[in-house]
Image 1 (cartoon, rainbow, N blue to C red):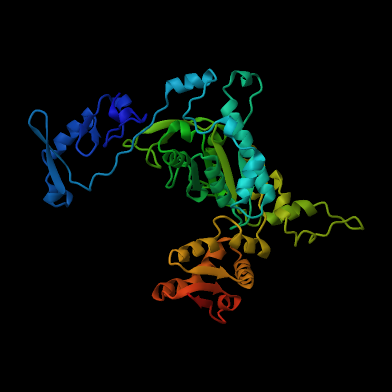
Image 2 (cartoon, rainbow, N blue to C red; image 1 turned 90 degrees about the horizontal axis):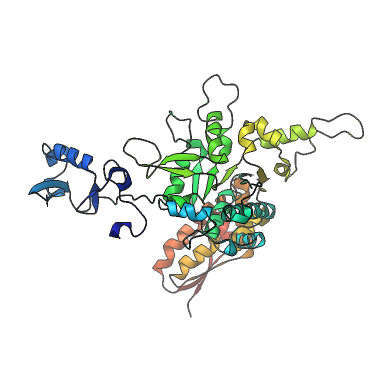
Amino acid sequence: MDEEKKDGYENCCAMCRRTESQVGKLMKLPQNMYLCEDCLQRSFDMVSTMRPEDLGMKPEDFGMDKLPGNIHFLFPGDGMMQNQPKIKPKKKEKEENAASGMREAGDIMDITELPAPHEIKERLDEYVVGQDKAKKVISVAVYNHYKRVKNQNLPQFMDDVRIEKSNMLMIGPTGCGKTYLVQTLARLMNVPLAITDATSLTEAGYIGDDVESVLSKLLQNADNDVERAEHGIVFIDEIDKIAKKKNTNSRDVSGESVQQGLLKLLEGADVEVPVGATSKNAMVPMTTINTRNILFICGGAFPDLEELIKQRLTKTSSMGFNSMLRDAFDNDPDLLAKVAVEDLREYGMIPEFLGRLPVIFSLQGLTKESLARILVEPKNAITKQYQKLLAMDEVKLEFDADAIDKIAEMALARSTGARALRSIIEAFMLDIMYEIPKDPSIGTVTITADYISAKGAPRITLRN
């Protein structure tokens, strides 16, 4: 077997990005560079009349190599050649095995090793504080999705009942943990994850990213392995930014048009995506990805959605003893949990798009108590990160309970969720991180509430 094909990948031309299966045998040049016959001929024609000065480079940046037939070829010098991408194509034998119910040992996960919903939630509890309902919903949805993926081609499941996938829409205020929850979930399930921002997506033909760029990122994170990418998770953040624009006469290329473009991806279709790039052009190789088994999770803050929910809940108000006051839900902290499809349609999401996101759930806003827990309880808590940093300098870092409460109180006032915690800690830890390496006699540093409030200094204990 050829050395380059032992890992299942194909070499592709450095210029036109076409693979060996498309153009035939490639010629291997120095520094693991491959060229097809067409591009090689064009290179000869170009190099015959080119000087290093024409490219603004020094002569020593170029080298010469001799090809068969006493022909010299000009190629970039050491350090200038980047690694060429390789493409791992689909294998027909894997598709045949799947049709017959056989599973290969290299599959992403085995159904017998797929954790149960309660086990998924327990693992999420180690990293994400609170949001019990959201973690329960996402655990069940992910478990059912991958159980369906691993069993759909088994003979006993190939009947008239076809289980459809359940894409998700998560709604919650900024900083409540939407992105972090999905990142933790993908790491737990050991599947490739692509996180993209919906604000950069536009309709095909306009400046911006096409909807296929979402799959390009997933393929890149899967190391260009198409089979692995087809079992991944795509998280589209800021989904509320592609709502239909109201009171506008211009073409809505970044709103409703993007929602319509995402329909085929959410439903499941064969989509041609570029490899190693986010836009299609003649110099980029293309591959086909089927999105039927890709789990799509959309998230957004949906500002002002609470007002639409209150209008719906109070629109039947009447006078009398049984009437509902219009301000009855003004101070309801769980108002987002009462969201309905009708509210999202009024917000600007089209019905076809919402129909492909059957699982809709909300995340609660963070309170002072939850922010204090986020500081100390998760495995990757920010206080534990700084304790580990100072432990490398053999210094012990401690936080008083009053200091934790003060940090949580300051973060709550900023109204940016858990993101405010790091910015606050970075500010008061700056001087400590700067001074600690100066004095090797420092053994323990204790952060106090007075230091957080800029009314005192941290307590420092010297080594014995």
